[in-house]
Length: 101
Image 1 (tube, one colour):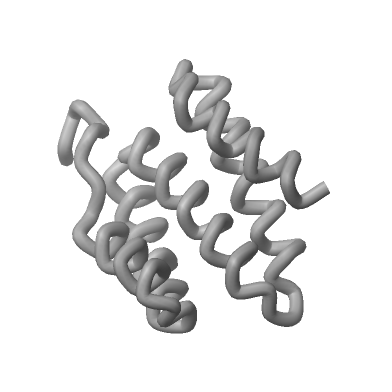
Image 2 (cartoon, one colour):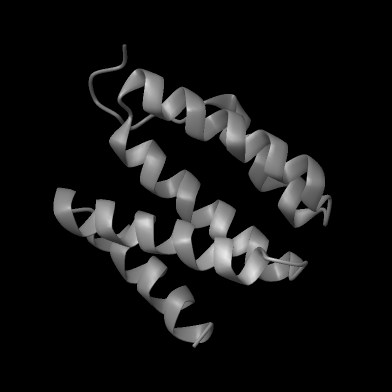
C-alpha cells in the first residue's frame, strides 16, 4: 500500500488521456478500474481526483444519465476533498458542479 496517497493508478492516467481524445467509453472503463484500485489501496487523494476527472468526462460526454452520474461523482470528489483538506480538488469540483446547475 502506498502510504502517501499521492500516486494514482495508471488506469487514472489512461482514463484522462482517453477523455482528452474523446474516447469516452474507454475513459469510463479506465476510471472505473482506477476507482476500484483507489478504494482497495486506501488512496484517498487519488480517489478524489479520479472522481473529479470521471465526473468531468461524463459532463463532457452528455449521454443518457451522464449528468446525474457526473453530479454524484463530483459531489463525492468535493466531499472527500473538503473532509481531507484537499483545497484545490474541492475548488475544482465546486466549479464544475456550479457549471452544471
